[in-house]
Image (cartoon, rainbow, N blue to C red; front, side, top):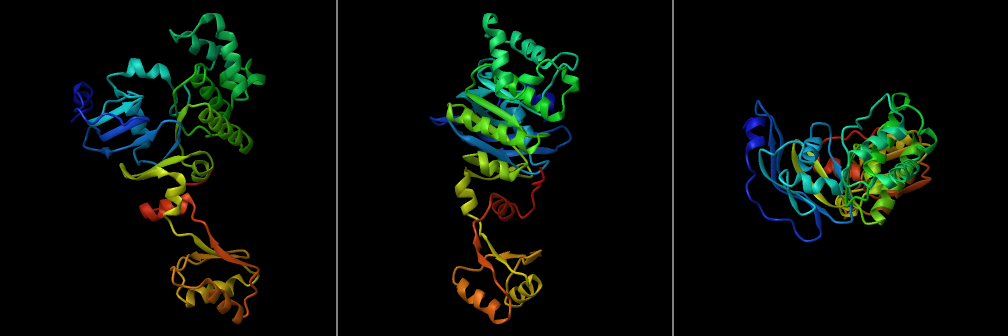
Length: 330
């Protein structure tokens, strides 16, 4: 089906969203012109009040999914409900309650940061013009741009532009906030501030749907997550449960890292790596006593300063689920 045909077709009627669900998709599929399958039969459930991380490498279908959820493109088949309403049919009803920062903010470079927000706010028919300036100043303060509000947007750094786009999404109270790589271009301090803001918004009752390539960001901020790979949903659920499903790593600290790595390998350990005085390996099976491994190392003359199994990370879970690595560079 071509994009034109998909845009005019009505998605089939599927099951409605369960109570307490802010985003729900059923069999959501997008096939582009030429046959490229970008999203394949996606069943996604985003609970109300959650900070939901949407994970996957480039080309996994994340941005296409977000564009369908926001009514920017129509699905080839399947259904999507946002705030209990079908998309894209209910786009005019739903979007006033949704703040979104997708694929970077669209800004007027010749206007100041404040004037950009005034322009955005004036385009909202529900915005009270009498409180516009107070609303804009509050949004600028919330994202840390009050001091730079008078600078033209074309002079903003990438991180400042991200902040301004987020401020635009926060001009009005939102039931749902959709963020595509919200910390892109920010320095470490800026990343911490935006993550703290996301937590604050969630505590106030806003559901946050956050797409990110930073696995540690998802672990630090999100309560729930979904993992995409090659257009298909691999797994979804609470972040703590996703990480607990993966095996941890055996880790030890020793000045004899080379000898330790060799001995572990000789005794059947897999995934052995050494970096400085740290050696790690795949966690052994449950029936293997860690004390026996430690004793073997000590008897071989390895000076063990620290030894144990580290909790599995979300990155470990992702690799275990997809069989591929993940870009975690920030």
